[in-house]
Length: 68
Image (cartoon, rainbow, N blue to C red; front, side, top):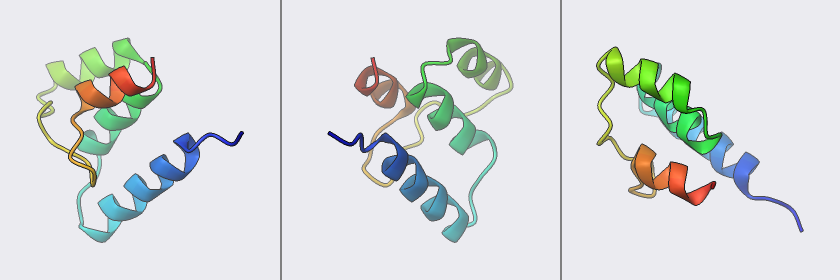
């Protein structure tokens, strides 16, 4: 069974680029999706908004719970 993780991430990247967003928001979502709590902590300390949502309305918290 093929994981949808890669396609979800690619869709997120494409949408982020198309909308002119990027950098910190995408990084927080990515860190959440791979379970990198140290990177998430650093991004939050730098002021990344944890309540931003992806194309499906998921916050980084919800994303991190999805990939546990």
